Length: 173
Image: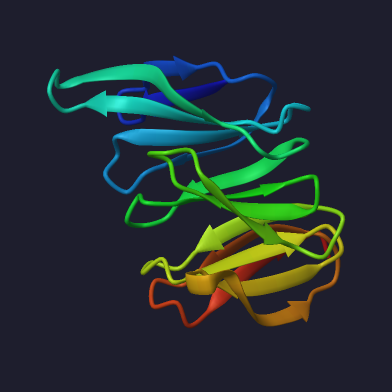
């Protein structure tokens, strides 16, 4: 389960119930939507409406189920402009999704498992990390491979700096 809180008052605003234990949840940059990635065999991502501008209310309503992965999804996040969702899943791949249509572009990661994915602020690059310690940068336009490098141990998290020139990796070693 994923929960949306107003942290200052510790008020629970919405409880989201995707299939399987939630491994990742991320807001869109406009704060209206959340994407969840779950540890389920179905490999589904869920897109949730959190805030309805017309009603000026928190909804917690499921808008879409994104299907295509063949195993648990470890990470999912919106691009800064909200037009794409990047996901990393157990089948050894990452995907870019159009949350409005559910269409996907497969980004093949040459490993057994992509664990984490993140995008630059301008949405032009994607970075993935895997269980074997490979960090791979991708150009989103054309899904072409950029630089790759190895770190010691599984990569559990990645993020670009705001200017897109640096990235940070989180790993076990």
